[in-house]
Length: 433
Image (cartoon, rainbow, N blue to C red; front, side, top):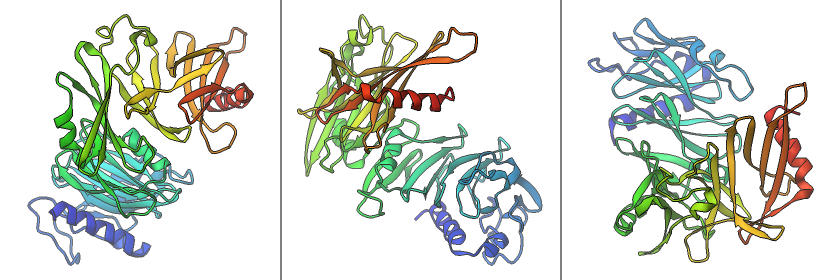
């Protein structure tokens, strides 16, 4: 076990086991390089990092590094984090940054950078609390995990170099599905091993590898087979490799988004059954004319994962597709009967077309795609909303909406009976009601 892993475990044990009075008196035993650790915590060495007795600041020796007043954001009840006590700290291995937990309920995780002289919030766990911190060996990434109000354990990473949190659409979907996710260890610089459980409990987890910079988040057992079976001449899309249960049998498949020769966007879906693997290509994902393109060479890029959702009782991929429009084209895809990816289709009024929706602002028109449970039946509906600047004297936006129900056969059908509920939802979301 590496020294930084042991330090993380010590830090977590201290702030979870001690009383609030003990936390306020706790002095870090993790010194800067060149110092000797005072494991008895009975004296302060020059350069030692510690929390002040009132939990309002972090010190190095007797000098203030940062105070909680510099932490922006709000906690679970809307109270400013700047007024919450600092209850635990964990310096990075190179001592250029400090991870800290803030709030008596451990609801906030933050990072302070010595180089930038800034503090930033990495994650807030409302109604639950942070459970662990783990620095990568070189000190660039902080992995953290905790439990939110829904009782599901989730994980994230903070990138000190870019000074912002890192997440992944797959992690958000796993949280919504009630799947526990927690970091096991750093595999190497920039690659984190995550364990993903079949349910809320931290047991029986499958090992995933998350490449932070590249964005790939996939089963470790699929890394080598996927590399061996990739078609020649293909280029993987950044962040385009991820594993999830598309078919609904409990066993995750791996999706690899790529561009084939000529710039054609495609996908591979890998299924594993014991030691056997099946790889099914889908090329192209949709036709070029469905996106208003004359050819794929003019696209300039391939597809990217935008979001994962559950529609019609099955996992659905929302892919950001290439287009020559200033609007983002979001296509909805799921696993087909042959094991590959196929688009959901919009079926109604005698026409069938791929389910592609546009999102963004163009001139005085804004187009929005929403997934929302309009009728409170536990299933999400798809809403396409278009807003235009009102021609009236009073400024505002006039919205038109088109709601669709998702069926188990991969079709979206118009749901005009939900139009008023969709319109009200859009108005509330945009503050135009």
